[in-house]
Length: 212
Image (cartoon, rainbow, N blue to C red):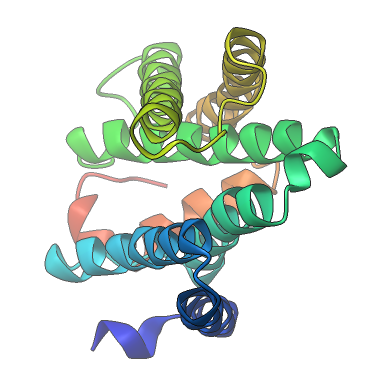
């Protein structure tokens, strides 16, 4: 059962979001209800996705997804952390872009079934970078739609905020793709590469051509 495979921090976040949505209903704070329910859905979707396709994610990765959604939508929008702390947006976008870079690398590596010699490391890293940038752009479109349709203020200062986010996304995606590049080159640097190694170990059947 996919629920039993969730880290403790995800359960805590779900409890906080559920309590916030119930409180928002009683106090008629509809924006809080909407944001809380949206955050719950976005934290549940990855778990359902990996369960459907029998993919095993490291606990640290599942926890990171939940923390990111919670920090972005709930703390950022409901408690206005974006305005309180100038570095909040930079931290979240940079960290998430690095994660998306790793996801892009793992996706491309999966297409080659783990064969390090099927494509040049620089090509794999470049495609991973593009995947991460695409996800970042998609998120900016999501923010725009939320502002237009539901009257939120996710874009803050509009174009400057969007462009700043995309620049940070580009830097973070570069770090994530670079970690994948050095992994293929056989240089174990730790950090993000630890996530790569753990994911490959948990999903060996998808990387049958992987060689040490």
